[in-house]
Image (tube, rainbow, N blue to C red; front, side, top):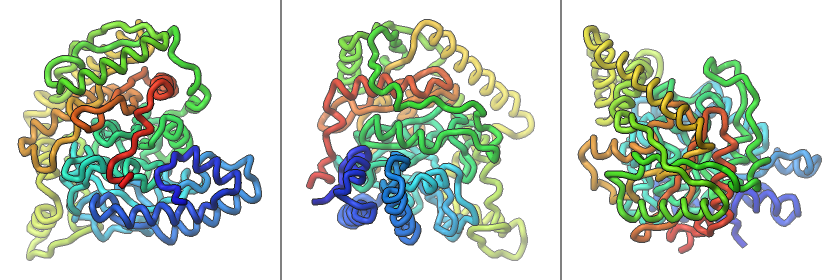
Length: 487
């Protein structure tokens, strides 16, 4: 019997009972990828030799010390193709570094390897993680397992699709403005963005360094908690890494929400929400109230400034980070008679349209005469947004709201960049403030998944798991499997 589609917790239990081996789990994952990825395009590369070695290592660990084995030992996982794995392609969904083979492994990935996890491959994503639909990849768009004609969200669309299709129980993405939570919502799975600094960014190909954060996508809150715990913690190679040890999210998964005060930001439930999304989220909030939580309406008045603030800060940082791709040190090089022409043609041919757009926006915001008017002012608004969250969290324990204003849309349906950017309007403020947030499935609208977002104060990552787990335990949405996976 195939184990594809099982949760990581169920796989771990079967491993410890001796019913399956890590090698069998890996074979089942590979078979599911081979069966479905032609329709989805979720994977860009397969880490076969590494996976085989890890499966053998996991088998040895489970044989020698089953009690001491980690929750992810022997579990197949997938990695967004912005996380470096020594010797394997790491393209960030771009042609400009399509030949890049990192000489090192990202800290988050190394922690997975040390825990005995089995990486199946690298997943497709919007180029340099810049997008909300995974249509911007240089290697083609990703399909949504609920409807392959629709997008899975972005930029971690390949990671979300891989889980939703039952290829792997856990995948890892990155969240700069919603790129884990939004695709999780559109693909009907769980996606967690940790507090900024909780997971090392060493070995992560940078988009916007003050916003990027690595996090897991999974079928269940329990799996997401285990996946987060496996990679969280201080890393001296990342100067933004939080020095304090993280809380154990698994310790609070059964604590429930009775007596908790949950805030609903009125700005998140207003204009722009599809009616079906509003209805499902309202129903989910009622479930939490029925479980004993007190629901209060709160206000985050600067929410409408979040999008414009983000699209100054993130492109500015992207402009700086992507300056290194110049055709000189590594990656694609388009030879021309002069150094200047070589640089210009390399970047013109290597970068896609969306990346070029954001580099130009960022360069403009940082240019002489405009820095104070745009970038410095955006940083001040960012501080204002963070302070508003602090004020709200003085009276409530966590916030609950929609993850995305709409369900998955048809590939190619949105051509206006501003309309596309609006898909992240409800997730961006969390990144600007550096807070933890999670998206959990909370029903369907027109047959497509809707996500409930839970947000907690900085460094209170375990709290979002507590609220999400309580909701998940009271509902059955997480048990639904995408049509493509069930076919």
